[in-house]
Amino acid sequence: MPTARDPRPLTGEPLALDLLNTRWNRDGVTQDLLADTEGLAVWLDSNGLAGNHRADAEVLRHLRTAREALRTAVDESPRQAAPLVDAVLEHGRIRARLTASGPAEEPEFADPAWAPAWLAARNYLDLLTRAPERIRTCTGGACILHFFDTSRNGTRRWCSMAACGNRAKASRHYARSKEIEGELGK
Image 1 (cartoon, one colour):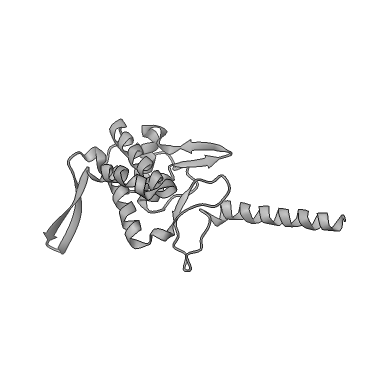
Image 2 (cartoon, helix red, strand yellow):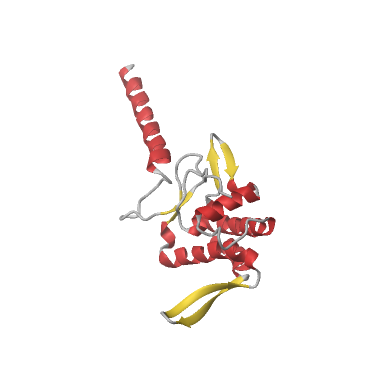
């Protein structure tokens, strides 16, 4: 059975941030892709996890737990989030192995229903190791999306130049034109 199209305005971010982006605003109303198992199936498919993980209520519950832990870490306080993220990470581990092609590391889970949540939490640790200052929240008005800034100089401000960036520039232009109109009217 084919999965529905991903309705989110921003996809393709690292797994941890993509999980956060399962909530977004549309016309002033917060949307939630993880409202049900159908949305979970879309998220798993969008992240290449559909073949290995089932889209059921248990996986959905664990993924929502991870999303809340990551939201606390990114939007509020890393100190408060540490026990929340650690609680998700307790459900898996990295197993080191020697394979025919050389050393390998693979995740292991006592309960496979935790796998997508654990992978997202683990990805967050990788982002923190790589460049924590590049984990960003969009500065576009009511936007609640997150992104990993891969711009050369690290100054990206919006989830998307086409959406939030364009709105911000249009708003600045409108404000300038109103200011000029006000000065001419004096």
